[in-house]
Length: 232
Image (cartoon, rainbow, N blue to C red; front, side, top):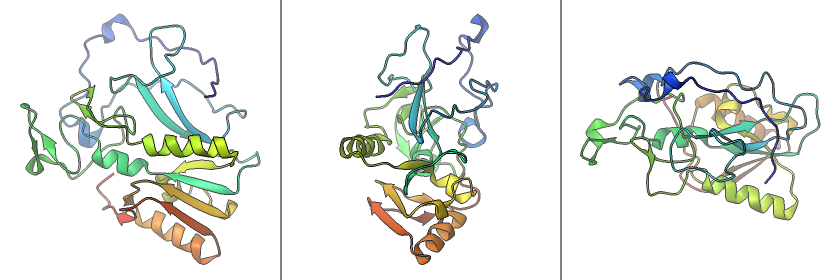
């Protein structure tokens, strides 16, 4: 595990304690928490990869994931424009993590009543990405449920890449959809595990990459189902 920093800590005021985690529509419209910039830009020495930021009161990080949604945050660093990168790009399935992520008792698959029962009738048709714990946990309320993290397959793949000394850049599927990741810079695209939710633009970009001679590697199943325009 590599650490980068230090990053100047941001301290919330004492008055922040006990604040509600978000309004009643936080699952579909976002938590609407105040914006805090921890970094003006990503330092050039940070390689492309999947990172976990830890929010804690201690001077040093715990170096392990917490069991409370929102105390850790997963984020992806793409390759910088002015630095060489790998020839392989890994597409991280953030949209699928979002679809299954229960927040404020709702996901795109089912809802959870106050007594802990799951009902399809309570599911939502829209999910905001502005919520804590994506990829790291299934919040049951705001506490981690008894399931492995969605990102576990990605972390296992990263461990294998490091053991085999294989260089890979990373991005999210949404980066490919909005053009922030240029597939023409790579010779191969790989996706891991349950990469179900794709946008039409993302699928078109990957098909064009494949048809132009790029290699596509799918290490998983139940993937590439198009999501509607209001899903994310």
